[in-house]
Length: 306
Image (cartoon, rainbow, N blue to C red; front, side):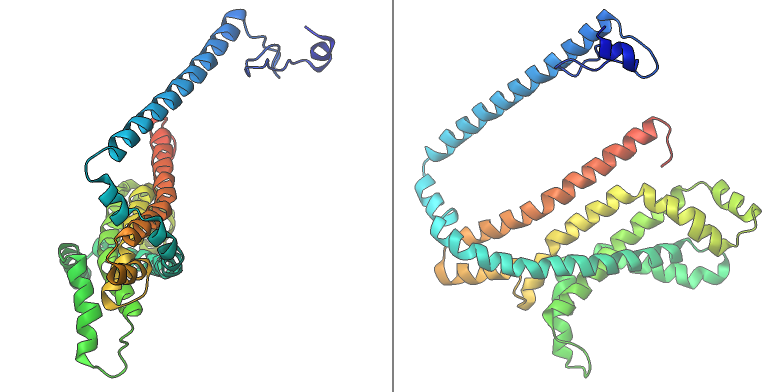
């Protein structure tokens, strides 16, 4: 033990991050533990190196198979043209801002409307039966109706009515159609979360003097929302992709911007560019969803609070 360790009462770690002396409570790791930790880190480094090498080899093999496949030159020119990619990329990015705004606004509206519908479906008492029936009919109808048909009815059909005071803006109408469909799905997610809370939680809240409304707001809903975060994030990921469907009404989003170039050039590279932009936007949300799901699974396995 060095003089520094003697004076401070604890040691540091060696180059592999393995404890080499005393810790804060005076415990000195054994030589076997130090060796075991060093071996574990060596195995982790070796596994990382093997994984990187196998990934590189697989990538090279796939590249060679693709570029030497029959028809690759024609495919490359039609779908992977650098010229049209450079032309499409700035226009697709400009249109993507509309998709992002739709995601933010429609996402907030979907969460609020979905929560209201879920609460309406879980209200107790015969007096609330009509409200429960309407909420159930809403979710059944919009979950069964294909989104594309909903968009066509709202975006293309509503302007044909020529009603005074009703907007004909395809962005607003498309956002309305997205909200109607996704709120039905999110309502079922919230309802599943509410019903997963044990009735004893509500009974305990009532025994403490809380009203039914207060018990729902302060006890049931916080637990329900926390448990349903992963599926809610998955629905938002799907909503982010489906915002591209508003282009059927003529709104210039990322998809429509690519479609304009394709219609003029008959080259499909802009579609690939738009698709990759959506993938790049979706992957962080997907990875965040996976992280939240794994974190909640670990806490559930350890018996922690959900």
